[in-house]
Length: 145
Image (cartoon, one colour):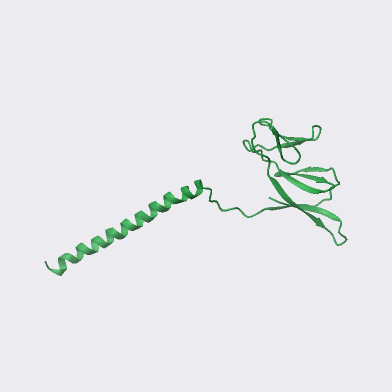
């Protein structure tokens, strides 16, 4: 056999082998990403900070879009407004002293603990930092979502 006849054959084999490797790598990547997501591997989003620029007296309750802020003598706490059942926006019922979901009537305590209803988990709790002026007086709150 002459070298000119075998050369195109080997370059064709190299080309096909290279294409097969790329196809295999792409297939493995396409299969690995959903498996990692299924296994619980997620990238956490960056925290979002919401500033409440008013001083609230102990016993006050402030309802925002994403959270409910409770101010007590011990400090402030923030509870998520997303129900753990189907994600509806919960409301604080002042007259009953509970947090209630309007969709399926899951009820939670002001601490976010599940009391009744179809929801099986407690509400998420967000961290709260008190904002103070130079004299140490509370001027507002920063909630980390």
